[in-house]
Image (cartoon, rainbow, N blue to C red):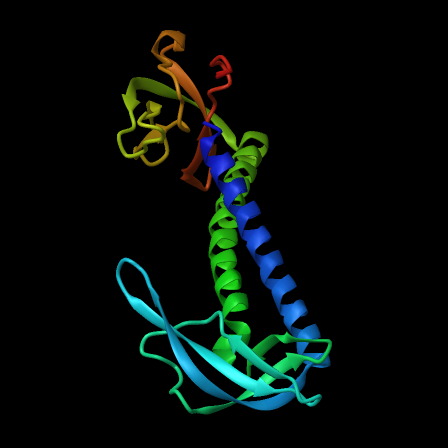
Length: 232
């Protein structure tokens, strides 16, 4: 089913988008810091921000620019417990061309947005790209077995519903077969890849072709190319 591929690609794209956003914020913040003036400000108020579960506090800072203009700035970052006390002096970065564009000189104030976007982006990108990578490696291994593996005729045993895998409330089917190694008398049970329709009526022979690694029959791929292609 294509759902897994779509899921992986969507997660990768979301992660890449969030990482791009984090990079943009970082570059924008660096550009701001390069042109910013610094001055001392005073925390004049802690504004409460209430949500359903908690209350956090944002500092309101008053500072005077080099041109003598008094600016009142409210930080977009809030916390509980409060990060500052009323009357506390803090260093302020501000844009001399637009003094209302200001930031408190603190790691959280300056870089929290970058860290949040970057962290979430990395998680999404790794989940998605890891799924894509694993699927690629699995397909690559299967293709290699089809080209260089030893074909054997394994006895068809049954069609089984795979209850360990569920997508959109559905379980895929598996074709099972078995083969006894004539050299060691060891019995191997082979399972097909997931099949998203009941293949029972399409299995018309007593044996199923399986490609195995002669050195390690546990590495195998079942040939189910005789099945029709599912179009929906």
